[in-house]
View 1: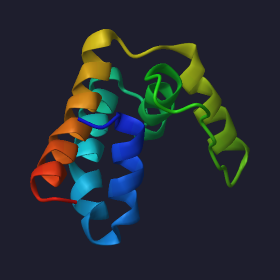
View 2: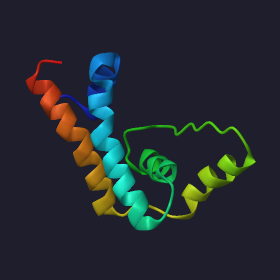
View 3: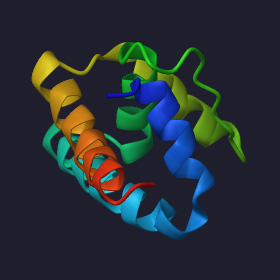
View 4: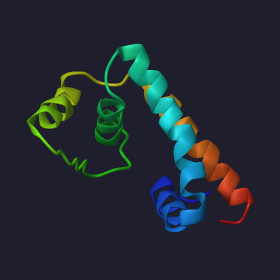
Length: 102
């Protein structure tokens, strides 16, 4: 099985399957966000800084409120179970893409 970084790049090149890829991940992020009562963006920022796959987390903001909201993501951390849930959502799609030959 190829590394996660390689698989992510491969899947993201195929625009046809991009939404199929993102929806289960967004659902996993949303469940965690609701449980923690934080925005989905904070969950995503936390995962990118904790997962070991992404080297840098770049976030864009349109105003000061979004900058404050994104910065607040660093005031807490995902636990191991939450990271595993997000990773499982990613791997579920990557595994099915491998079977489809993508």
